[in-house]
Image (cartoon, rainbow, N blue to C red; front, side):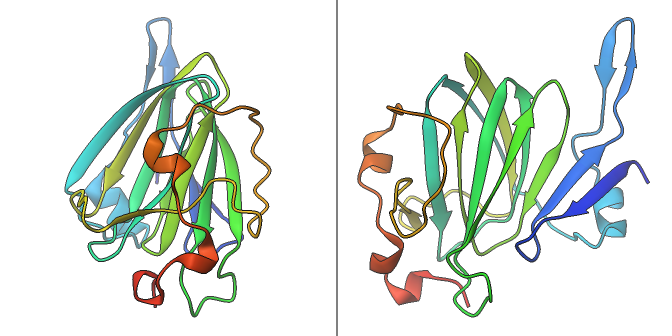
Amino acid sequence: MNYKITKCPLDGLLLLEPAVFTDSRGYFFELWNKRTFTILGLEIEFVQDNISFSKKNCIRGLHFQNPHPQAKLITVLEGLVFDVVVDLRKNSPTFGQWHSVTLSGDHIQQLFIPIGFAHGFAVLSDYAIFHYKCSDFYSRDSELTLRWDDPDLKINWPVTNPILSEKDQQGLFLRNIPPDRLFF
């Protein structure tokens, strides 16, 4: 198997480190392989790939969809990001808790985020190119934004004066998310 797997403190969240083959030309790695992920027990059908380019101090998120929830496989291709997930599974013992990892294009790691989490990231380098595979299509009507600076979450973002979209500025506090939009 070409992956080193680390379980994260929030159930189902996995940090994956694919085998990276380097030589004088650069590097090569498999971003995703259905056969390998099936062996890992991650029988996910990904239906959409997204790439974002973001500038330093940008925070994107914390986003989630319900209905039409998405599992995601995150990879930073260039740059350095502080990646955050928040458990929104109402019956989970870690409901409302967050976990972060620093992902870098210089050290290839991937974060597997199962259904039931809000996701966001802050760019720590001059820019970042961010790739994520999704298990369902984007649905504007299903998307909600959890406020990045929710005082109940106390996320220790390593960014001051973040660059935010209007949508992210107007996110909901966890306590204000309608119960039917949480995960069970």
